[in-house]
Length: 314
Image 1: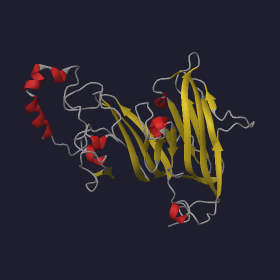
Image 2: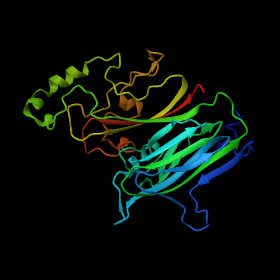
Image 3: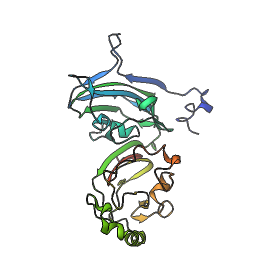
Image 4: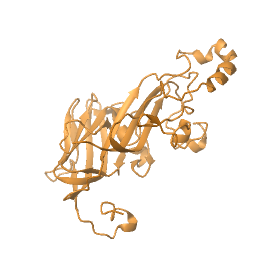
């Protein structure tokens, strides 16, 4: 165990770390209780501009986007607010994602869930937490952009440690958010196709034949991550919108494939998607309710959010 992790877990909490704990927040600097930032439509606000060397340890926030005229909620606002983070003076963000997706839930909704690095809680997932450690050697900058057409109220704090120096092998935390509308499949994407007589009569034929289709190259697969250099992939948040039932509306059989140095890495690939997320064969069954937000729509739109540590050649 190295000095950067010792003292941060409960079992080593008694160790005194050689660093200083700091916090940046939206507190009211005049001492009143207006402890939030207000962002107008289109506004970009700098949340933090930390100097020197350190490690982000915890990010918390809660937020609400409203129409001031009638105080109604902006629909799907967690998808319309963009978080960006820049390490070590870089001009392109290492983190760039809608804030709801960054904290673990897509579709522009908030939902209560809990995991070790991310959670939304309590009721309705209104408090957002991230515990991924994020090192930096020469500054860290956080910004937030309000892409809604309403007024955003944003409460937050960012806990971090100040260090004198960090080991040279510390990767920088990155995220990517991407979307592919109408992903390639093996059935026609036509409204009402699954309910036509010609489809129902031939269901057994096309169903069994397409189970035999082979894919060893990854052609037409939905791409989760493309990256070059030295790094560590640490997680993926996958969200699928199903607007109408189609022949390929069950998305759980596609194999995951990992290509490293242009070679298919057999050790980690070739399992169905449902197994990658520790699911069962049916997203409706009770044991999967913790992973299924909605199951009333059908279609083929995928959105992913990636977490990884990466070493940049600076």
